Image (cartoon, rainbow, N blue to C red; front, top):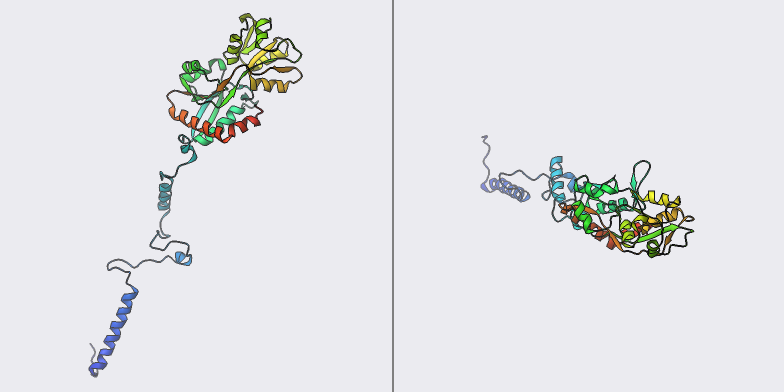
Length: 320
């Protein structure tokens, strides 16, 4: 220590008082700092933008990307965030469902030259999948083996203008959804044929009546009294209509929208006879063990029916 001239005690106290005052001010400035912890790091970007949280409220910019992704994952898994599919009976999580269909039944389903399956049913199922969280893949199959194919596990569901009947559930090992559309059976005859006015005329005359095998048109004609030897059964409905246009049949019994489709394409040659004489409902057939898919489709059908989307889609396809 260096020595120097001695000063009066009062003068010697002045530096001490000044030093104490300086230390007191410094202590006030750092009152938020706790002994043993480093001082807080202030984010300059946060300070410039008053819309950001204070530095102590949120992680600073030096948090790595993994941390940011982890935070986003926690948000996505928040059970309070429910998507539309879940609200409508369960989100199927993007599941691809393989749908069997007889793609020979316009306007409900038909096959384009490039193999694409189009119509009311494929369009409706896409809307249903938008709600249920799934993707539909339509596969053409013969009507005669369609129910056995579902039972054998070849498809996840069947959608093919299928009328809801208990025996079809039994034959396929499946369960129907709630109805998505209602139709009735009608008679189609040649435009210049005035002898046929209703189902009774088919039963009481020698008219040859065409139907698609195993359909409710087949059942309706049989139960309507058409003699067995007057029935002509075809594997597909286009074959029946071609026979009628060729003059090989006197009439056809089939679903009203399909009848209207063919009459619309051949207005000078064909006519619909009277009004529908049955009432039927279409449903989607799902294996009885797949309740997750069944519940999701049911909820989606009810939602689209209530919103009017099914009716609007029917109008787009010319279905009345």
